[in-house]
Amino acid sequence: MNITEKILAKASNRSRVEPGDVVFAKVDKVMVHDVSGPGVITVLKELEKRGKRVEKIWDADRVWITEDHFVPAVDKIAAQNLVMLDKFSKEFGIEKHFRYGMGQYGICHTLSHEEAMVLPGEVYVGGDSHTNTTGALGCFATGMGHTDVAYVLLHGKIWFRVPETILFKMNGEIPPYIMAKDMILKIIGDHGTEFGNYKAIQFTGEAITNMPMEERFTLTNMTTECGAKNGIIDPDQKTIEYIRERRPDAKFDLIKSDSDAQYHAIYEYYVDELEPIVAKPHSPANISTAREVSNIEIDKAYIGSCTGAKYTDLLAAAKILKGRKSKVRLEVLPATQSIYHKAMKNGLLDIFMDAGAVIGPPTCGACCGAHMGVLAKDEVCVSTTNRNFPGRMGHVESKTYLASPQVVAASALKGKITDPRDI
Amino acid sequence: MQRGIAHKYEKDNIDTDVIIPGPYLKIMDPNELGKHAMEGLDVNFIRKVKDGDILVAGNNFGCGSSREHAPIALKHAGIRAVLALSFARIFYRNCIDGAHLLPIEIDREAYNDISDKDELEIDIEKNEVRNLTKKRVYKIKPFPELIKKIIDAGGLLNYTQ
Image (tube, rainbow over all chains, first blue to last red; front, side):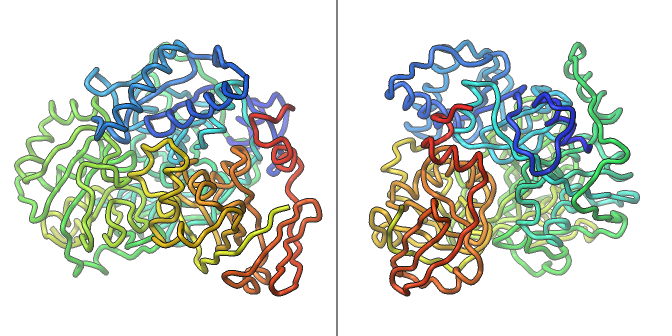
């Protein structure tokens, strides 16, 4: 069995599972944020209206909450939702609740690994589609809606159809100026936004072994844009060290794919051949090389989100921006408070400010068109985020180009889409 | 049995950001969400739809976010079923487990045959969609066993193993 099958077999108390099997699997961790949390609470309240009073949830220690989409509270409704979340965690004894202005908080998917909220081998359900991100820790991580998350809170388990797994072997040495973002955009461009629907996407190969953990999360994050149920990487020494640095006492099962594991399809990529890539409006699959669109003028460069505002993302952008000025609006929103703090201590924020950037608090912000720099009609943005659907970052007639932090930084300097090798 | 008028959007990848744009995700009132359904694609949508109507679309309907606001908005705009060539997985789960509306996969032949404003009737016991306007019947694949049980129970929270 491959890693996804082994985790689901263990969680459903079976010796073996096959793709297509429907299982009820035990869940180890659950996350909700300020959008999915109020939705889940509404579902539980509906149950109460029908006479099923919810007095306790299955295991408060396995549930964690963060505020990320509409924070700092953007308006009265957002503020009210945060109050609702507060009441909820107090009522049910959920202690792991990350609040802005109270130390560590930030975008759920980045916190999931920054704080090692989830461990290798676990089944993790989040009320957000990019929950797939966390699978780079070697766990089964998938996003669900309010009703499913509510069910997990009540029963500690949920149904899954065991997915077929597509394996991507990423061979070769990673060239300068190529990041995981270029790799995943290339994969989505080659295979489309639907090829992973109902399936698992697993990454392996020399390039995966050699890339930092933070880069691996960029790959699994955007398996969501392939339609995948989960993205996953077999855990290795780097995974173990990453977890140990954060939680020295953590106990976990290191589950890895068997050498004779079966895959639905296997694709090989040679990363040495890659060029910096952008995804043009309005689909992550609409790719071209940065050089092919270097005539596109931009109004704004955005460095943020669970995909593109980890510490290594900020570092990559800062290396290009150092000592230079941005020609367009440049926004930097570190994904978590801890990343923000580290960027400050290491001088990255000085580099961004010297370049002219505005630095915002950790939030999903304009990535989902919520706040903190949404786009006007016809505005063009190059962004480290993960989606460029119509209206995603603001006006339905705005345009977003998705790219790596290095491409975004290089583009900010020139005021048009730029390959970082041309700076 | 579900009978209603078809609203056809000949488009693949109709995503959750156009079904219910991000800024509305703060809203919990389902009727309020319904007022903004499909706003990113067709601002006249909610004026066209009557209670019980059916949405028809191409591949990968509902791709993108896990927001259950998407099927909730469609439902409260009046939509009772979506017929599509294929569905994104979380949207599909949300429809079934939350008992918001029926997601029905149709084949290319049915998709091409159905016109905007056709009157359709969905029968998931007989596994068919009947086009009352064109007097034709399209076979649909039966739902997998567990999914059918969840539909019959009225959603996952009512389902007992």
